Image 1 (cartoon, rainbow, N blue to C red):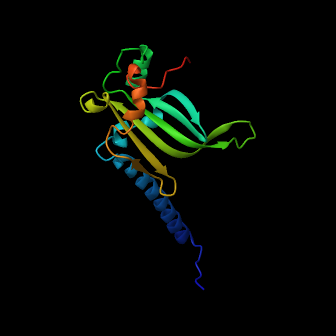
Image 2: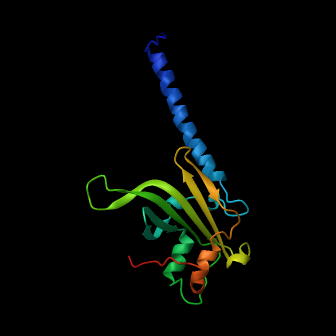
Image 3: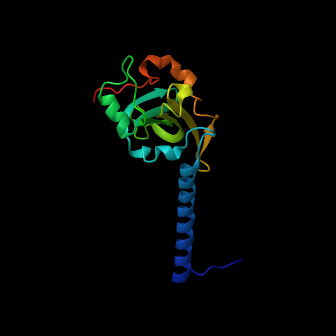
Amino acid sequence: MLRIAFTPRNIAIGIVALSLAAFGGAAIAQQNKDTVKVPDGLALSEFKGYEKWQVIGASQTGNVISVIVGNPEMIAAYQTGLPAEGRKFPDGVKMVKIHWNSQKSPYGFPALVPDTLHDLDLMAKDSKRFANSGGWGYGQLNYDSASDSFTPLGTGSGCGFACHTKAASKDYVFTTFPKR
């Protein structure tokens, strides 16, 4: 049987090893966020800082809770009254729809609350780059909690365009900016 002495030196080595393992895992997750991309489509790195963007709206479908956030340009566009009939969002606006699996509130309240991350939906306006899809690029990145990483679903920047044609009169945007 191997005996390990708990000397200050061995404890320090153990703490350093655990810290490196933890930071290494975080570095891998960050690297994935910096490099994951829908083939021939949007990259998550184009949405850097989305975690701190302002909330546009929220929704729930089945056991999935969603929050839609927008970059400052998107929020400014909403504040001018968009999406309005016939008016277009300017190039440079971006949204991310964050989906979480839901769980019952662990505090006994009769509410569903976010649990584990499920996926991210991406949407960016660039009328030249995405001319074939109404000026918008779309992407979905599924999240794997075991590896703490994202994988793209589908290929190309137009993968969400078919659904969004239902909102063509609102420049392909379903989400409104409700009163606060």
